[in-house]
Image (tube, rainbow, N blue to C red):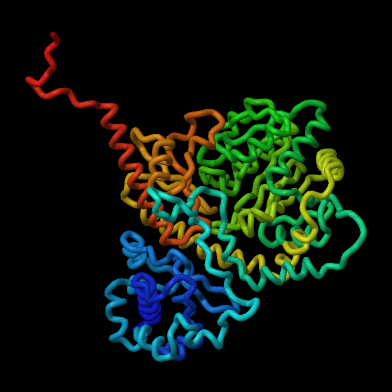
Length: 542
């Protein structure tokens, strides 16, 4: 039996044990070393199997702790089981199927169930208890609902709601050891009398510069980095600086459809928005050139929400237009770390030679949106000075312990290790969506990167109707029309977030959404083309 077949057998066997209830939520699995020794296979075989199961959402592995079954994974019957059986990632293969599971006990590498029982009950700790089993302060968190599961009630019966609205990353995927170490570093920082630097903790800004150099292709000076309380606060700060420079509310062009929270932040701060449509290459430069604006907000690496990637020629043309007209280009680099096809695209700021780009980044999509920690990279010149002035006037907005913790994650490499882990998980979910939507008549967009997909379809079914029907089925998604500034520009569709759900939950969500689209399209077709009464059955007027 080759390596991929052995991995497939282990994967299929664990899936079966989860589905039949032998392994329950939060049950620990044996350590990779112990299970490999028991089965007489290479440890890499078990590591590859655990990685695949982790990516599929069946188990959660953590450095220094036992792998455990994810809550809710046992519900992955039907479409989830069928899709998982035929799918394989990395070193897994099609051998991870029902037939492989059936032959597990008959092969040397497949004697997984019996071997585990012989070494001790998995539910009681088994072989993993001595090698990486959770101990005091080192284990996985206590059992809790999955990130995408929200309690709901239907006729008095509690059921799980799968929350696939976009914007939520896999917060619980970060290594608990690294997370706790970061907060210990924050707690052990020396106390001092005084206020925090409004522009941000020096240690954090230094680490942001290092990360940008490694991942985004440019290295600003530390003085050009300003810490903000999320992207919305950064945009508000920028509007304040522009108003101070211009002596009037700024006119800011935005992508349509686009980042609705950012749009609200801009208008709340007093900006006037100018909606510019989006093409396959990003913001429509011809339309932009026909308007007079002070700034333009773009998401060139992965347009939000449609997912287009701005090609380099388009980027250079945008920068040339901005330099020629004095327009500020605000680059929202919101999820550039998650590129599922090809190599990561350098930041727009890396191409800027005229000093027209304000680069926005943060940790809401990579770590935890509740940190409310972001940063602004300013160009040299009057605008950068105006932003710093506005920042100092507002004071520090991100608690210093939070900044210390984030700086620790960056400095120790924990942040980059976390990114490597969740990229794999997100890629598994992205691939699942692509496979599930093949030959359905729906188009899946925005799958080149990020944490969401846009599902669109032809025919008479509105996004709002599909959202409502999906919610009735226990799945929460967003209407594509809600991201529009001018209604009707993007067509009918829904936005499905997959950052914080397991593969079984994602399968269930896709089942519900696909059924909702079919039902609404059929209803719309009947309403648009009512059948005439049968001959001889017309009502007679009296």
